[in-house]
Amino acid sequence: DIQMTQSPSSLSASVGDRVTITCRASQGISNYLAWYQQKPGKVPKLLIYAASTLQSGVPSRFSGSGSGTDFTLTISSLQPEDVATYYCQKYNSAPITFGQGTRLEIK
Amino acid sequence: EVQLVQSGAEVKKPGESLKISCKGSGYSFTSYWIGWVRQMPGKGLEWMGIIYPGDSDTRYSPSFQGQVTISADKSISTAYLQWTSLKASDTAMYYCARPRHTGYDSFDYWGQGTLVTVSS
Image (cartoon, rainbow over all chains, first blue to last red; front, side, top):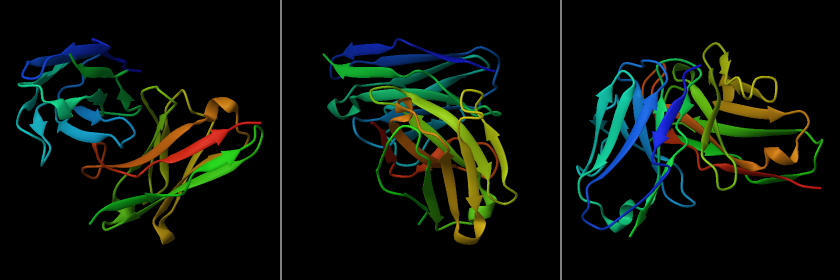
């Protein structure tokens, strides 16, 4: 089965900073990669699908890139409301797998 | 409006059985897979399995195969997650979720979650 590995596992940055989270698949998954945001006590929210397509209603400071095995989620200018845990997910085939998550905090 | 409404929180004892539900509305229930996701306290998201209500085709994560049963009743647009003998380690929040499109896809609709607590 394909494993998804995120890095870092936690991250602290200042408001306005550019933040990058990486996700690596153990085998190629083309662009079948999604990113989710989960705020404490809330339901996960889809941010990006197909590696780089922004879900409707998601602020444009979020972007995704990558294909094959290496993917990136970028927040161009960190805002206080972006404090959350971020997960990547591969969905090309079952089993569908999430990364272990990256906890993002404000410095 | 697409909605997934899950059954309420449960408190159970080890060894008991449980079936939680996820009712879909606002779309063709038989045309989209429904997935189940576990989140243990303070931990990450784990994909458990997925069912296609149209023909009950079901796929499980190897980690959950044999541990739970996923089913669906298309006549009432409801998917289920079932345990025959709960363990304390089954204590978690369980979410159902629907992909963006028919076929495998990212999950754009989620249920509100069902908290299952297993304690003696």
